[in-house]
Image (cartoon, rainbow, N blue to C red; front, top):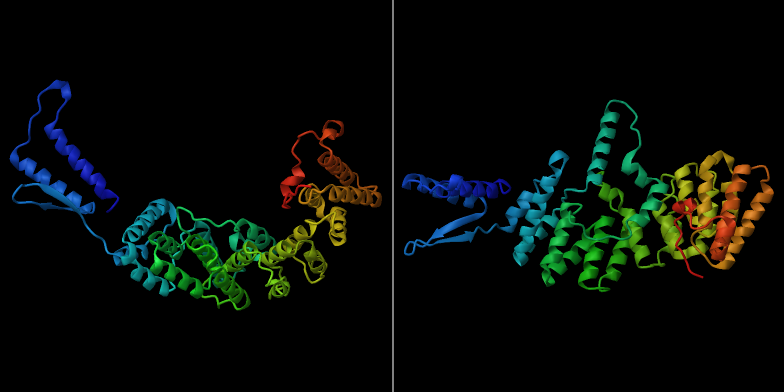
Length: 441
């Protein structure tokens, strides 16, 4: 109704104007009779009431004064609890959701009790389309199981659970920021509290930080509380993060927000460069299902740097580890240190000479032209190339790729050789697959 009412007002105003002003052929206007004008005024008044306004008429002056109808915060929350943005009406519903959240924000401190009551209920509605796809995938899997069929693992849920997916997504979620459309009702209410501001709103946000069991909410509240009072809540955030990683809450749903909790929790440790959890994390590289936890791998290689390589190299050579995605997560972390670590060099040689990997083995070459760009490191990588070529003289495809990479390294050391070696400024496709940070000499 809120969407329709303004259009209705405009239509009635336009109709009234059509009676009063007629510009066709420059003819004079003809005013409507009193009955018709009274009818139009009544309809206009009714439309304004539907649009959220009512009229107060001063009987002495006949002056019409508009007064905005006040909507209580409980009504906004009651509406929010019924709205689920899906399908073709998703964008329209999201506009309604944002409208109600803006209404809560405008209610200021009077909205806090209603928001507190809702947050204490632990209920939530997920708005993010990816989360909704995850829910549909799970529903399809349950239906398949009920028919006696095997549920096929696919989609975002399976990707997050894989070592490869959790490792790479750990970097994707590192830069959390506020979006125009909140990911869920609870996250949207956190934003509302931040916008309301004040000691009471801040206290409620801090309380929710101590109560939530979701890694995403911890990261979200960390961002908000850091904006409100930078550094003040760091220790509380880290304590909550450690507790949830060591003793995660029992899952109450198959929500994507719950499934991705560990990704966000380890991202918080990376953000604060928290090394106090390293010894515990070393025991978490392989999870209870015998799979690599990519978020742990990303945390260890970020905090420990090259010192993480021996540990990860031992894991990648564990014969019980059979999933290729898990090995890729470990492998990428190990290969960041080619040219500065013997285990990393050995693993690089194993990968690029393994013809069973096909063209995928050449992706490892990207690690030679990224990451550490100190001349000593680049020279060590050139020596590694020469050693591998000597051991694989009959692998023509590999040797061509190694020669091209050797030349690229030479130009990185001495850019004046670009024309001589034929590399010029052509893009190095291998670098597209390298995730190492560029470092200056």
